[in-house]
Length: 615
Image (cartoon, rainbow, N blue to C red; front, side, top):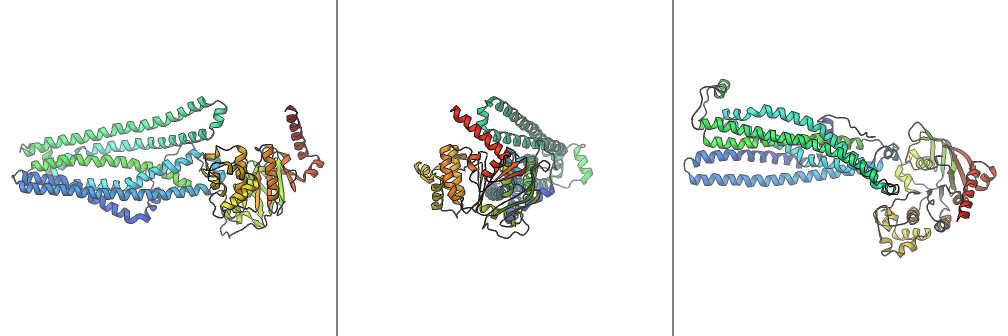
């Protein structure tokens, strides 16, 4: 999906996108049909009221029939109540359908975000993805809840008004519609201009969300390097671009709606001028009336009455209102097309680690891992891992070391299927991981990383992660084994202590110990530690080392580490260099070899000596 800052202008109304949107309404088709029927009835009731006013004036008021006037007034009042009740039902029903529909779309989007591989997140800013699930979905809500049905409602309002106007007076109807060509021309220009501005507004909003997300996430770095002013200036530029786009849209609205009001007022003036002359029987021999007669022949209609004139004044006001609303709804439709295009683009995004075509349920039993001639690249061009082959036997602890960028973490990403490798094969218990359901594979593998993420909730929630298979007792036992139980019990609410976002109130060491408890509570067959002890103090590290020595028994373990002192007891150590496996053996064997590992070890040892001497 890799989105660029500039977005390509798509179709004003894309039929394919519109069909996909309407498909979401299928579960509520009877509600939608009922809403359309209510919209038609509401439009008819609204259009009937001016006609009833005409009847009240011509048939009762002019003839001093006060009992009949009371009766027709009651009818008008009843029509208004009935219209109000139906309008209430229409609004409630469509809001319900809209909320249920976007509820489904949000679930689909979040489910898709959960399935996409990490490669996708490498190239798509989080702020833009948040915009898809929030702002873009809300645009669809406006379309489902009001736009779709109200477009139909406005069309029927116009239809009923025109029908009733021509039933009462063809001549006055044509006078009323004189301004219609100018209105249609202005509407076409307005739609064209606003369409461009809407697309620009969505683009600038997406940029702003991305910038805010990035800076809030990295606020510690911003403060550390004193970049608050620079960040503010950059946000000011992004905010200014968004504001200008919004102001341009306001400008077009500020021009268009007064034009509609002017044309409406002009139509009223023409009705008063022309209709008023007919009412007082001052009809010219030439002009518009002769033109009408030329089109329709001699008029056989009754003379224009004051009631008809009064009704036409009401109809004129009612006629221009839905036209103006249709222009607004058309813009909602365009905005919906832009948002749905981005939403469906995300929903159609292929996962970079596709599931097997016919996967069978799988359970890791032995925990044997084997890489066979594996090649991997993040961008498809620059190789990160080349022709890698190694085996980790059941219950064996294999350490992976090397300089930064040597490919250590990439091995973990391949095994977990965070990224798809391009060549070779990776086997777990003799099964190619591409034939194993990803959920089954990861269920029996626990990964502890250097950058620990704790979620909002309680400490217990962060250990169990909502897995019903992990009981409270299992979570407590895991915490006791890794040495964090005493700390948890010292908190006011123990395991039910609330955790702030990202575990902000805990130290780095405490968060890492909690992540160890989280991993061990799930009793994995394979345990992976990716720089998991790099930020723990010496005392905590010793505590963790003693706890994990017992826990690693019977589990296949991969340990990625920069500090070589933490992996000296590993069964085997793999030394990576520029994406290739260059050395393999025990700690003693590699030191005796005098190669890359020995060089790294001696360098770290000397640095530790200097640090100790300085202390």
